[in-house]
Image (cartoon, rainbow, N blue to C red; front, side):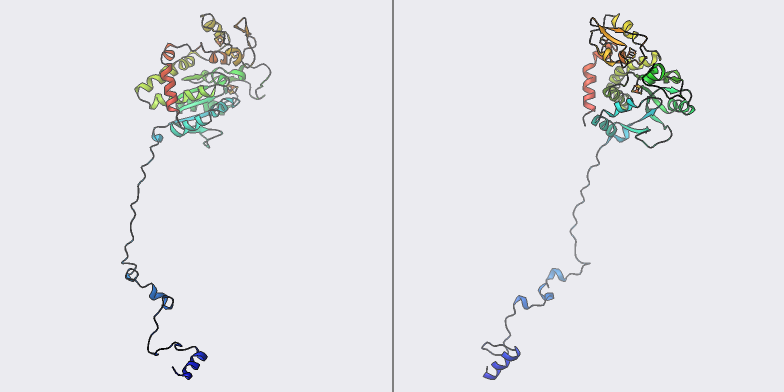
Length: 321
Ligand code: SF4
Ligand code: SF4
Ligand code: SF4
């Protein structure tokens, strides 16, 4: 390259300032290549339509086996009561969730299910007595019997009238509501869960046993029948209860062990323990049946005692979350 050429290249930046002929093409670096050229490859030359997309196998998750189809339907029918029985049902906490998840659909409940008319159901838990001044209550209790396979009187008010029928002072009825009857005086009741309020475990066990009675295998049905029989007998015995039941059926039978559960259960303190045995003030008694229901000797049933372990194991098994 002559001096002129070198000067020209310095001025205009063209050409090669190195020694050598102009015909020689510089070795192209990758940076110099157009982008399109850099990405040219046999794979990319293929048209989108020709490209094969690798198909990942769709893994079908096995459907979770839920015994939904085998659930029973349960409703809580609220007559004239204080809602304490419903609170006791809710006090099962996770146990209640297990029941609702696996065994029972709650199809009617004034506070928990938005259903206006009493639907068909397997088990109706009826809380409270029936106000005779309220036409709507009268219709509802008859409708409940018509629509439910098993009617359970839940708590002392439904079983015997309890405070709504007998209270003297303390918890007052609404002035316009004067006359109350236990549900057993108006409809046939299948199972009683007395006490004010029944314990959460009692309510839970009755719901489970109703499920096993309706959906269980033969062995489970037999255990459920053994468990429910004393409560069915109580329902068949009628709507009268009194602290004196303890006297005739427990103390006079030599069954009282002096545990004091009856005195602890009596909400109006009609039962006191005297010399290790219950003493009952009949004038104070509001006929709730709680003392009898809570007495560990009142439901003395050879069927239940003989199968106590099997029944306990069964409850433990089905209540596993
Ligand atoms: S039985 Fe007792 S807890 Fe249940 S509704 Fe009657 S007063 Fe309330
Ligand atoms: S003695 Fe007390 S617990 Fe027993 S039925 Fe009468 S009020 Fe209820
Ligand atoms: S609960 Fe039954 S066994 Fe216990 S003291 Fe009362 S009557 Fe006796």
